[in-house]
Amino acid sequence: MNLEQKNTEKRKNEPLSNSEALSFFFIPVGFAKLNRWKNTDFNESEIERFIKFGFERKIKQASEMRVFGMIFYISIAIILAYLIK
Image: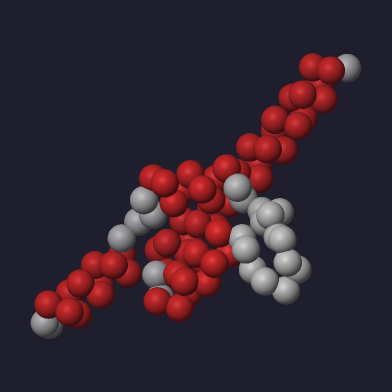
């Protein structure tokens, strides 16, 4: 195995960085589309890039972080609705 293949394998198995994970957590759904035919959602373009380069671990972690982010916002909404009553 040469150096290029080792680096490719290392990148495929690398986890999400903290900033990537936070962006998937705090912005789990795309809502900032200025033009409906142009993809301006950062998370969607990042997932497309992960798929293109075969970063399976990052794809799995990104989808998990998006689910956790959605659960977080739903929980916040439920808590606020309960407190406002």
